Length: 249
Image (cartoon, rainbow, N blue to C red; front, side):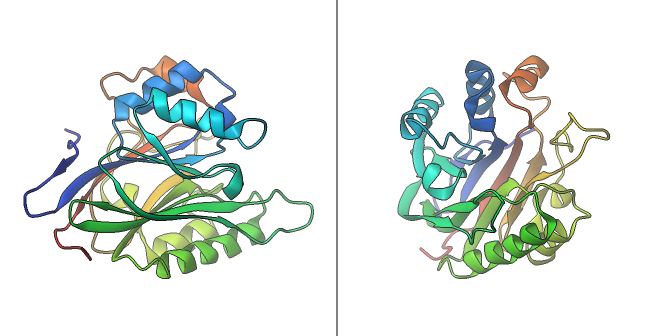
C-alpha cells in the first residue's frame, strides 16, 4: 500500500514526491491533471514546463488544477519547475542556469529548501542534456548544488536522458540513493515509446532519507492507462519518503 502523507507529533514527516516530464503541456492537459491529482504529491519535480509565451500563466493554471502552488522554476530555469502542496513551508528558492554549450539547448535547475514538520530538505528538479559529455558534466553540477544547499537532506529528480547504465546516471547513483533501486514499487520504465522501454526518469535522495516506495504509479486509484498515455510522452515517477524528526529544524 502506498503510504499517505503525514506529519507526526515528533516533527517527522512522510511525504510524496512526483517527477514528471510534461512535454510543455502540449498533450491532453486534463489527463495530465488527473494523473497528478491521483498521486496526491507534496512535491512535484516537473521537466519541460512551458517556457515561452505566458509560461507563468500556464504553470499557475496547472498548479491550481492540481491543488498545488508554484514553488520555483519554469522559463527562468530553462524548463524545470517545482510545485508543492500547502504542507510545505518554503524557506527559499533559486533558479539556476547551467553553462551553455554552443549549438545545444540551455539547461537549468529549479531549486528550493522547504520544511515539512521539523524536517528540512533541499529539492532540485533537472532535465539533463541529450549530449553525453554535457550530461555527465551536469550530473557533477547537480551534486555540487545539493552539497551547497545548507539543508540536512536533499531530494533531486528529473529526466536524466539515459538509463541507469549511463555515466551520468551512474555518477548520481554513486553519491545518492537511486530510489527505484532502494524501494521498487509500481512500474519501472518511464519512457515506453522506445524499443526497448527504458528507465530514463528518476528520483534520488541523500543518505538518511528513508525511501519507502518509488516507481511508476501503476496501479493507483484514479490513474488509468489511457490517462498515462494521453498526458505526455513520459510516465511519472512517484516516491514516498520518511524524513526523520529534528532534521535541521
